[in-house]
Length: 463
Image (tube, rainbow, N blue to C red; front, side, top):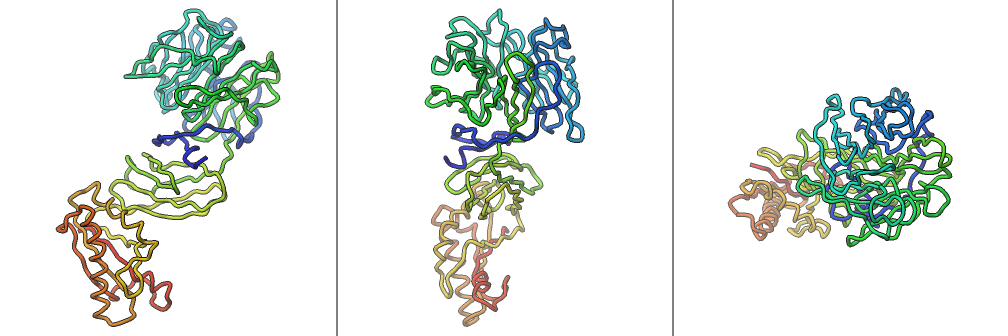
């Protein structure tokens, strides 16, 4: 499976393909939180990781006592320690209040056939309410979630035409309107309870079922060609306990599991980490990136954030090519064997800026580029993409060996080689000036061949 298969959506990247997960790279981050005598499930972390929201059922401390099927509760973390659960009375009602997600500071709650969005940064102000078509008028157990991009809904309930008890239903949002809930089909739903659906990484649906008659366990199914595959039981995320829910926090790359020692006692929350090594990328720019592409080995990945990360599959050498509007393209190579942080500086394409085209190296006493340099010629076309009227000067340089006048001539001819490439590819001659500076402005020592090679270079100046 390619590196692209595992990319995280937290950073709002745009991907054309996301593969299913094997869930084989997870490990327990910490033991369960301090227990309280009620159920905790469907948990979601705030963006800063310091507040955990969850649903609680069969809880005598709910707003309307034990008759109140679900309330939303939360815990705050101080100095790494999770505090006592607090009832979120600002949003709870006598209805069955079920948390569906927490994305972009919107706490999303299902109740009585409607979805309510609350702003956690504005005293839980109700931002909007959305209706669901096909929601059953009478229900008891219900669970579900909204995906990260908030356009797909998955619910579990016992409705008309179910294959057994609770089935999983789905709805898509088009033009800000939720479509009618539809059963996802007999390939997934069984004669038993199929509950707590959670869409992970866009094509992988996680849920819980008692179909094997050994308690409630985690399963996942993969969407392919608009059909869900035969469910598979998870390995590492299934415990000796009875599972109640599984969610995923895209900020911390943690799974949050709700499980109990048996089907009768209270469920508690556990954190499991996606332990795959990751490359964490930060761009040190004065402005926010709105349109960028990363070319990583054989993959092309779009992004629109100054910070993002991606998992790596194995110890390997990775070739990075960062292409961002209004900046010079950056190429770099990195050997990765564990999680690393890389900081990227990009040179802005603006009047007065200068860049050494380090990947364009000429053979000694020749206008021929090294074979390894040829693929980088196309990078120059990027300069004219965001500013078609840009004016540039191409400056050729040589090392200090040979006749001075011949080197001046050679360096100009090298500049002409680059200009001719651009003109052949549609750039106007009037936008490009050339200079030959020979050995007059060395950037590196001429005392050895390795550094002399670097002086046989081309620089680009934006007029």
